[in-house]
Amino acid sequence: MHRFTTFSILQLLIFTAFICIISLSPSLKVIPAAIIVTSPHDNQRLLELLLIALILLHHIVFKRNVSYLAPNQSIRYTLYLLIALAIASSYLAKSPRHALVEISLFAGLFYLVSFIAHLYHENSTLLTKRLTYALWASILLCMVSFYVGYITATTYKTPVIWPAPINGFSNIRSFNQYQLWTLGLITLPLLAFDFKSARTRNWLHTSLILWWVLLFYSASRGALLAWGLGILITALAYRKLAWPFIRLQFTYITAGFLIHQILFQLIPYLRGSAVVTGTVMRDSTGDRLELWSHCLNLIQNHPFFGVGPMHFAWNSNTSAHPHNSVLQIMAEWGLPAALLILALAGYGLICWLRKFNIDNLLSKSKLDCNLAIVLFFTVITSFAYSLVDGVIVMPISQVLMFTIIGLMIGYYGKDNITELKRKSIFMPIFAGITLVALIWSTLPEILQSASGDAKRFSMGYTAAGPRFWLEVK
Image (spheres, rainbow, N blue to C red):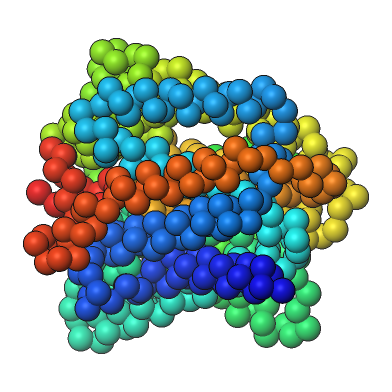
């Protein structure tokens, strides 16, 4: 009984931290300034660290099995080799401690995958609904903040400049990343849940249209292109089965664009001035091309072990990351590690499409069928966006990325629950090592900021902008 009670408390703490980071932190500073002064980005990072620490503790105490994350020897040996390459890259980096920050962070996120997959096996419907409702709570909080700001600005004829009236993100592109992670999952209630009230469905439709208005307000070309690519590939993969989901997406993007034009073009024009303005539209992509060129130079000069995890920030005078996930991993971790990661991702995607093809999904429930399509769309869309933005860098994006992977692995192994009874002693031990490494590598900056010696977290690299903490030059 004691063991069950302890497990319940830990699960409750983990779930609370998870809800805080995905539901509350996009709109609010969950950690009060009385405890530690943080930017929105750093606030979200601290919550992510707390979540990972609790999950690692959970795996240490209860020795949860994660063998289904590496179902065969080839995948296990690939993961072992990847860990060895990451450690070697960190050892050779300019600042091994800071390189270890990123290695231990991603190792901890790997355990988040295991935790989510385990919860999915326990009760797939309950987990899916809870996650969906948490995301809905988050976007409603964001929209209340945004539209109250819009009404205020329109009434008093004062301009709105980013980040107001959305102040839960230090950068508008981080907000776009969050939107792309949510666009698929928040349609699940309309696709698969049974609502007795037509009014509820109408409110959901209206909210989703208004959510799309925020995407047009942020003027993100990359997010729109990534969405289009995700829709196209999902349509090719699932054809008629994907049509209900795609139809909703086209309805929302069309209505969202029209409402955006009314709110931000027609109404300001009728009132005689553009009272609500954005400052995020760019006329060129020269900054990205310069960063990618610099990345290629780093790859050429450090092909085998890279410059070290997170060390693009120590080798750039402008941005702390190159706004391209593949180039970032190649430049920082080295080509062999990057190829292993890409091979694992490609293998996983092939296995997914083989198992969950059109014929297979026809025999599944409405929820399972739509969930498979939505998860596939979300992964494709966010990967596409990661090629032009720091999706693998930002804390909420990292948590949601590994949550989606956990859902996919849990969904994939749903019919093979009997295989999960084997336990591995290596994984709890590695969880303990990861927890110690994560605390040791991140604690200096946290203590420095908490003591009041610094007004912000600082890792001392040369570039400006967010990477692990929000570095401001």
